[in-house]
Structures are given as structure tokens and as C-alpha cells.
Length: 219
Length: 256
Image (cartoon, rainbow over all chains, first blue to last red; front, side, top):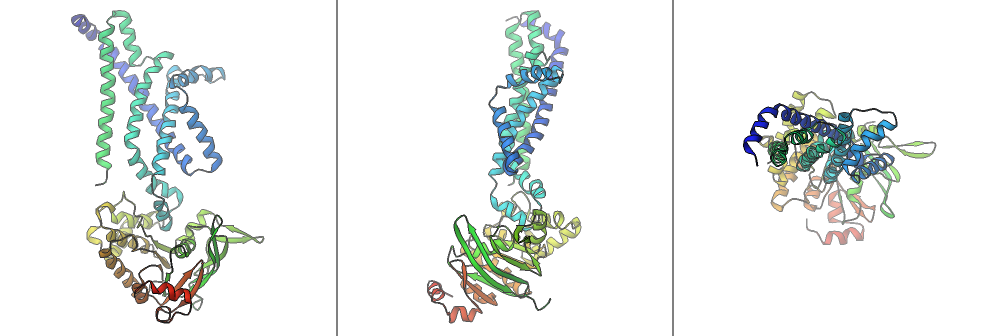
């Protein structure tokens, strides 16, 4: 351990580290937003959609969940460029993580919807709500409450998976730290630091999740 | 028009898979009439209500409510179920209270009642709240309007559920064993709400196991047996002088 040397290096490079953190947060937040939006819609289709559509998305979800997220990232970057879609490394990375996130959110949405008693839909029908309004006002509010803890877990998985974008050359937090290590050889110190930062990011997400949970739980 | 019955059920057949639950049910109801359907479990009582408000599909027969043939039309001699958008309109002529209440757990009593008024009837918010409060008061639940279902007893939940259904101003109210899931001491508060609605002239079709209540509140009783109407008539006839042997033996097990 070289504490004095390490703190000196830290003072000189905290701007870079901060930039890395911001990049990791930016990637994660975007992937979680896109993935959740798509996942909710796919989850609703999985539970209530017309059979052909349902089978199509069943296949999508099972297929994506069966592939390592690293393979998805490499595929988004290399395969898409082969068929003429040229994404930046960052764009390809966010796309891959969004798809990964959507498959997980779809599955937990479907599970949460399935757990709602059938009488809820019948009650909504009996007061003449259309199916669309039943989903919006009756089913989703109950499903979202139910799936919140699992969804928070998925969000932290996305933050952790964002480290894999370093493989295709996105300068997120882990990549930034690795560059600092290759310059300073302070691997122990910097790996400890980066682990701690990831822990802090995910701890914050968990706390926010718990806060929301406390707020929306019905007494 | 006014001499026509409000509800006319003709030759209603309903099967679940290979099991035929309704084997040709016919009866009609006049405006303002209260009819109770009695019969042993599995005789098809609840299924009749669920066919009337189109929660179930049925294979044959028709339900006409206020001159409207509910849920189906005939195209080139083929019987077609109407699209969901039309079913929603037809369904709005009926209100239903369920055995398990089925209140929306994430909404207060008040919002449970206003939801349909605002989102289905497009009432504006103030009017919806006023209407909902009027009905909640009517069922004795106004003081608990900000409570969530989980904070209410079964009897209170059922009264809110009745307010939710009736606030939609249906032509016909359907009550599906609304006291069967309640503790005995909570049954009366719900029955007295139903009775006061009957006194008001609301047309009501009830499925119930409360024989004394059925006799007290109904103009006529329908006795269902094995998927058909075995006997229909005023309570005095049904309970005191049953014509069919099956009804007589069914009533032996009950007290009135």
C-alpha cells in the first residue's frame, strides 16, 4: 500500500474519476429508463396480448435472458455494423443494456400482473372501464407496487453490467480506473476505490427504492 | 315499450368445456322488480348473472335488457360476440356486486367509487366526488371515504362495492352472493343496505343463500336446479307451497 502516493494521484485525477462516474450513471440511467419502458409494454403483452404477439415476445424474452450480457454488448457493436447500422460504442452499449434490462423487466411485470386476482379485472369491467383504462388505473398501479423491490434489484444489475462496456472501449468508470492503474501501478488502491464507488451508487439506488416503497405501500 | 319487461332471458345455454351449466334458462323481470335466485351450489345461479353482464361468453340464447340485445348479434345466421368496445357500453347498463367485493386495494373508498364515474362516464371530478359521496352516505360509509379497503371490515368493503356499482346509475343491479364471504355479524349491515335500495325501486337480481332475506325482499323467487329454472313464483308460493319436489327437498335443509 502506498497511501501518500495514492492520495497524491487521487488529487491529480479526481476530475477524470468524476467523469467516469458520470458516464456510468448516464449509461445506467438511460438503459434503465429505456429498458423499463419497453419491459413494461412487453410484460403487458406477455400477460394479455394476442397469442401470436405473445409468442413472439415470449421468444424475445427467453432468448435475451439466455444470452450473457457481454455477448449482447459485443453483438450490438459488431453485428449491427456488419448489417450497416453504425452505432457509436456508447450507443451500442446503451442499446445492449436496454435490451437486457427490458427482458428482465418484462418478466417481472408479467409475474406481477399474473399475481393480481382475476376479480380486479371483472370489477373494472363491471364499472365499464375499457381494457386500456383497466390496465392504466387498476392493474399497473398494483403491479408496479408489487414489482418495485425486484425492479430495484434489476437496476443495480444494470449498473454492474455497465462495467462490461469497457470491453468495447467506452470510457466509463471501470475503464477510467484501469487507465489510471496502468499509469500509476496502484492497482490495489484504485480497485478498492472503484469497488467502493459502485457500492455507493447501488446503495443509493437501494435507499431510493426503499423510500419509494415506504411511500407507496398501503397501510 | 313500458309494458315490455326490463330484462328478458331466453333459452340461455352456457357450457364450460364439456360441462353444460345452463341448459336453457328463460325468465323475465319488470322494471322495479326484485328477484332472488336460489338453488344448490353448481345449479348455475352465479353463471346467469355473469352471462347477463357479459363476463362470460355463452353458446346459445339471448339476454335483452331495456330493449338492447346484450353482447351478441346475428350475422348471416351466425351468432357473433360484439367487440369489446360495444360490450363495455352494454355492460354499463348493469351494475354488479361480487361475493369477494373486489374493491381496488390501492384506492380509497372514495376513489373506488369515483373511478368509473370519471374514467367510464366522463363525469367531471367535482360532480363525480359529489355523486360518490352521496352514495357512500347512502350505504353508511361516508365517514370512512378516505380509508383503503384493507382498513375496512368485510361488511364495510361490501357496502363500498355496492356504492361503486350503483353510483354508475345502472338499469339493473346484480348481487352475486354478496354476504357469503362475510362473518355472520356483518351480514345484516349489507342486507339492510340492499333492502333500502329495493324500497327505492331499484331493479335487482340477487343470487343468495339467505332464504329469509330473499323471502322478505323479493317480488319473485327463481329456483334453479341442474341448469334450468325449476320453479318461479312469489315468495309465499315458493317457500310455503312449492310445486316441485326438488324445491321442497331443497327447502327442507333451510330455515326461513
